[in-house]
Image 1: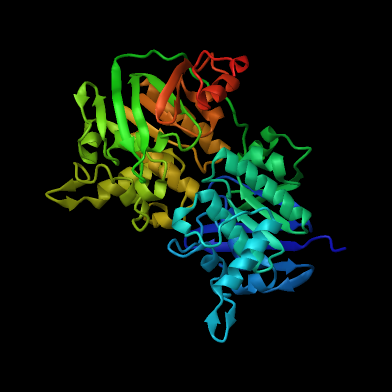
Image 2: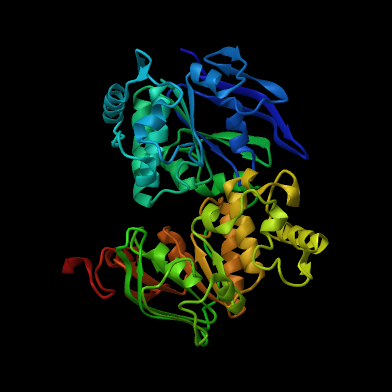
Length: 511
């Protein structure tokens, strides 16, 4: 039996001004789940894009099943049995599941595409691998987790044996993550080999056999996952010891900054997502909102930020009614917003990094005068922020933001919003897509803002994060706050019961 199904030997990949992969070697055994671990911008996705034929390396060689190959484009990769699920899915949103899966390999009869036959094959394939999807559903109508299943089925439909998953859990709910881990295990039992790009240590420990670590484009080590602790993996990834606990003094809350009264907000289907919600946040505290995804968190966040219309109720910022104010007025009154969807509400992807860094302030002194932008001042501010927040990009402040890694896009938004030091900072999934080193840094920044007297509203689907960083925790269920508890005294079990709809004093035996 061959020792390695994939060998990437001494790979070097350069872009203008940066060496993304510097002499990296990766060797994957048949039938294993091999994790590729590294910080945001370490070169993980670039290395896999070389394997998938999206980039051509400057040096090194690739062997598949022991034979040297030249992968000039993704079609060559597909022919070699290599498939890839990208971090940002490559799906046509107004096409059906079936149309997306067969795209480029449409089965035809007498010159016509036989959708019925293809849908039947896809149904059988999805049942075989436990990837239940509706072949006739449109991509725009299904969840992110289902979209990911479509991407996996695209690979399987093309008979891929080597499956690359690029940050597959970045946009998934905890339940969907658990399901994906089971799917990966099933795929390996069926004889597939998997390369998993990630920086989530829990997931590596849950599913991977071996792990290759790269740091700032260089190979660091390949380790056996079972015998390597999360702490060791973290220190190999970032090059120093990483603290998993947030160190902070007790909060000293002041006056009320945000007061929400009887708030009602509808979702995109015109159903009540926020239903008579009441909440207060004070100066100098972090209020975390815990809840199962889909209980009104997104709509609440968007209503406070001004991105979604309020049906009834009242939102007050430092005593001023802002319920119906435009977004810019809210920003100028002292609201900062780290949105849950960084592409939709956080960045203009076709703008360069420096332009994105002043999206909230470009019309003010010193960034503009008499309607003309002052690029020197903009660039100076952008350079300061990318240095302070360690935002990594190929061409520095001139990098097109859409070409940056997801984690570095997130750090850019956080840098911009935290730098303004707003009275109220709304942080929606602030560490989604970030590595442990960056998470540690962002948590410290949020605590620093709290200690300056800012009010911080944290919404996260990671219960550990909510418990770790919050001073108080409000639990949301079906659009209402079912209880608010002191974070120091809260237990995971208590919060779990509240997230299922019980009150804060209810015990497990009460069910």
